Structure formats: C-alpha cells, structure tokens
Image (tube, rainbow, N blue to C red):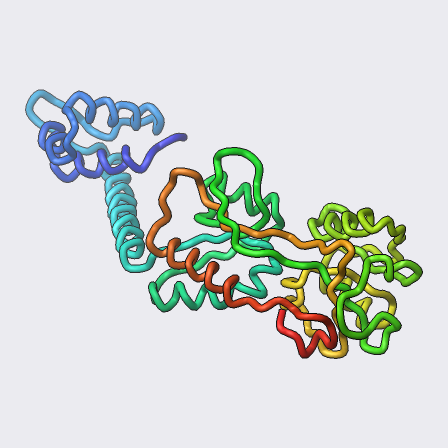
Length: 309
C-alpha cells in the first residue's frame, strides 16, 4: 500500500468541506486533480471513501474511519514542518569534517569563535580520515572540511598551516633529549607504526625512505592512542605529526622533531567551489583560521608534557 501524506491531506480537506470543488479551491489545485487523488487512494485502499450523487457527497463508513487519521497526520506534518522552519531560523546548523588530530587540537578555539558569533548555532563534527572528510564536502553533507589538499576541481582549497612529524618516546629513552633528531637515529630501535592505510603511516614511510633508513615495525596498530600506550610502556618509539599530541596525555613522554628530511603535512580549508558559505559556517571557518594562526609548533624537543601541541 502506497498512500502519501499529500493524498491524506487532500482527503482530509475534502472530508471537512464535503465538496470536491470547495476543497480543490482551498488546496489550490484543480477539481479533476483532487478527484484523481481520491480515486488513486481508493484504488490503493480497496474501498470507496465517498458516496457521490449528483446532489450530495458523503463519507462511507470506511471514509469516516480514515478521516480522523488523515486529519491527525496532516496536522502533525504541518506542525512539524513549521517547527523545523522555526528552528532553522532561530538555530543555524554547521557541519564540519576534519581529521581527529585537528578536532582535538584546534576545534575547541574554532567552536568558541562560532559560539560567540552565533550563540544558538548547532555544530555537527565529523572527525574522520582524509578521504571521508573530502567526500562529505563533495556530497554536500559537510559545509567545510579541514584536511590535506584534495584532487579534482569541485572543491576549493585554502592553505591554513603545516604539521611537522616528531619522534615520541618515553622519558629516559636513549634518544630522549633536546633539539632535532635525524631519521637515521631510528635505526636499531623498536618502532611502533600505524596501519598502512593511515596518512600518518604514509608520512613516516616517506621520511624513512628519503633518509634511506630501513625500519621494520615491532608493532603495528590502527589507532594513535594504542601506539602511544606502547611507547609509554617503554616498548618502542613512534613518529607522529605534532597536532596528534592533543589526543593523549603526554606526562612522562618526550618529543623531538625529526629532520633530514623535515616531513610535514599541509592542511587547508576545503569547501564546495562556487557555493557560498552560510554566515554561521563562515564564522566557524574564521575560527579555524584563528586557531591555526595561534597554534605554536614545538620548538626543539624535550618533555612532551611541557610542550604546546
């Protein structure tokens, strides 16, 4: 059975007016269109809704039973649509897609900027990997995304900043100290790697390859907190982009920037090309720019617990 809300609305109006002509006028449709809608309903239901004569129109017993339900459904639908429209006016909604590390490190300041400009705004955060963040903007689900530069011409990209890779180890480790550390220093130390599908692993592999260093991971994990837990237990070292440090407690850990070569991710603000942002989405975008501008990278090295990330 396929009865639409619009058909129920037409039937409810006809049942109230007891005149197809009057009901059609109230609904702003033609009388033949109203009659056809009722006829289709009767065909779907398998029974007549009205008894029609040349002089009068009356509901059948089945029509009287359905009239109350049709009236209730129509009323609830109108009220629901009016409420949605009212909430849309009072409470703007913004959807942002961004990497989990950016969400942890920079979203709070950006969200606070949105809150100051639009106190009642609803913020929907999709903390997802790069490919998913790009797809959410392409599909029109997310207003903006913050991730690496995408391919193709459908999206606009505004550079925001970079995120340098550091070595993370437990305090007291042989590599603990201050100042940059060459990738070649990793040779011979147990290494904790992220899965090959992650952007972090691709960065780390690129740094090792450029330094001509062969490192076979002792451990391979899917999530950054799992890698950090192994490092904190003294089971190895790992290499992570700086913004990921906001995702875990850093007491007892030490970081040193890696160099020769310096490896960094470049991030940007992604939107649909040619599609203007709503005022609330523009406010969040400005907050993200501000958060990147105020972010201070780690200088030198030392205890991760004492450094800004």
